[in-house]
Amino acid sequence: MATIAIIGSGVVGQATGRGLAEWGHDIVFCDRDAAVLATLRERGERAFAPDELERVHTDLTFVSVSTPTVDGHIHIDALRAAARTAARRLALGEYPVIVMRSTAPPGTTANITIPLLEEESGLTFGRDFSVCYNPEFLREACALEDFLKPWLVVIGAEDERGLAALRALYAAALPDVEVVVTDFTTAEMIKYASNLLNATKISFTNELWLACRRLGIDGNEVMAAAAQSAEASWNPAYGIKGGYPYGGACLPKDTVAFYAFARSLGLSMELLRSVIDVNERVAELVQWESPLARQRGIAPVRTGGATAPARA
Ligand SMILES: NC(=O)c1ccc[n+]([C@@H]2O[C@H](COP(=O)([O-])OP(=O)(O)OC[C@H]3O[C@@H](n4cnc5c(N)ncnc54)[C@H](O)[C@@H]3O)[C@@H](O)[C@H]2O)c1
Image (cartoon, protein in one colour):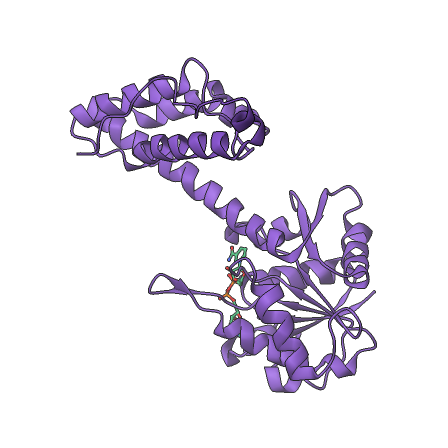
């Protein structure tokens, strides 16, 4: 059983803390919001403000503070403040492990969090303390359930002791869960890729739903069937390799043709247009970057001879 601090006790922090408590760990919550602290204390939890936490020793510290998007840009001020709180507690532990959980741009842990922790504490990452990046994929509506039964655990780690500590924590409670171990920046990118994949799928459906409305048919009926017929939907291995040919007899031909048809109905189809543009760019890039193709004088692949109409 470990003693674990949770800095940032909102949706993710509380699900993490309550889940870890169910696994038998001793949890200390921390938040800068007095109302959050009051609610936690009413529930009988140990909860501290950041300056109070500085004196409380724990084996691991999870950081799940807010990283809001303001005016189109991510704000990581709270993450920097939480890293400072964590740094001031580093000297308390024998070999502290900090586990970053907040969503942040790829490169944040390596280029911002670790230098900040070292600067504030005077200690050295990998020698005196560890850091892991362990993104959360839970859904807000069933946060605790998703924490307790994750689809996948991703651990970004660049030193053995931190990785061993976090691996052991998950292995004890979830012996069968798949764990992906990678570097910090890849783990941060996996979190974004996962959200962007969801966002893109929803947007694609919305774009086709608008087209169906124009045709006077039910978009939900169309998508329910397409979700079963399209390999992209039923085969998890389909379409997940970058630089892979977007070819075959049907994809470029039908995409270009449907785009032109939909435009003739007055639909803008921005996403479909981007599908054509992105794949034309990748096809050229992949060919020109392939030394074998260059050596053999292979020309860039055109998308099946199907040429997209110019943008209006
Ligand atoms: N909500 C989700 O479904 C979800 C899922 C996966 C990942 N995430 C990511 O996890 C992070 C947390 O999300 P959330 O939904 O739990 O946010 P939230 O707003 O519910 O909770 C964040 C908490 O952090 C506290 N906080 C901010 N700065 C602090 C500081 N310096 N010290 C102590 N406490 C501080 C806030 O008061 C708040 O209670 C974000 O990066 C988010 O993008 C969210």
